[in-house]
Length: 476
Picture 1 (cartoon, rainbow, N blue to C red):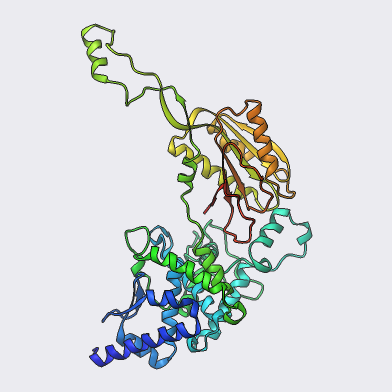
Picture 2: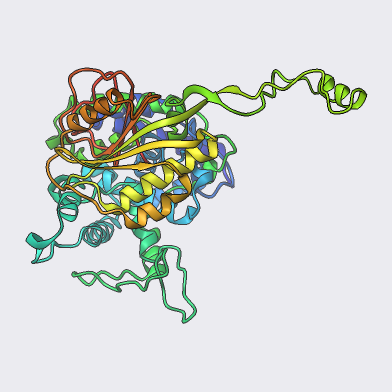
């Protein structure tokens, strides 16, 4: 049973952990003071809601007796969850246990790279070995026939991260675990299968076991520090998350002012970049591309049914007032979609993007009955122009579509071509152009006469700066 002495001792342990973080990791100072340790008897663990770090005093003391670094490690672990926004949209995560593991592994990897002696635990050597093996499994060695691979595969590899490595972030770990039986799902024969029902590979080149339940259980035991129950809230983000958004930006700025060779903060900076990336609702962005035009249908706002039906009833088939046969609605008639067919955009990504775009616009009721969509393929020049007039044919068109180009990326030819379409009056009501790309290309110097949106395949701080006249969004 907790006594006043137990409460005091536990509070002192957390205060000491906070001071050590501030002394050795000064870029965390603002964040540390924003997360207040709060004792909670009977919790038998720890959790955070973005404002308090709840902990069971007796539980904390017992673990500290076994490993003195435990309070510091707990503080860092929970703090990084908040800085990386791991609780953002938690209610929308389908496989929460897999996500819980992914975020724990991402955090523990960052802590390991910070190389803080006072935060080391007995499990670290084995955990580091597991993480390195997992990284290798996520980034298998290049095949000997690399030169014969498609340019898509080469580019995807080269742009996935430094040295061709897929970044060890929670999102990437989560995706990998799901693809490798992270949910522990079995087929009719009892074999572990991935998210699409395909059998798993078994082991990687280093003999790393990839079978679902064993992998998840082993990694969870070593990476677990706190509970994530406080993330299960009804609001879009956990409490105080908006405040931590600003804090994360501050940590990111402060971290860049320190030598990364001393702090080992490369993974920290990478995760911060992912966490602070611009989040935008793609559906809302598309809505801004709508244009006003006359849509022939009854105007519900201006038509009075009382007078209309009264005339029909009293004078036969002669209404007292005729309905207006049109109404001005914000809809899209002419539209331009440009696909970057350089080495970075694979056909699967292109299909997903187009289906998502058409689905969003269709659900919004944004298209006219008759549409005029120019689907362009462009690398360093316009390779094709497919005109779509019927949305119902989009699936058939995607099935027959062949990617043309695979050269360097230059955005200017597509804008020049669209300008020519406007001059020839083939696009008479165009107000928006969407360019699906990785962002590595030459942008036009002059602002076009219509809205422009660049949709990126991934978050990447190293891509060229987008002109101020263009909107941008990362398709998630």
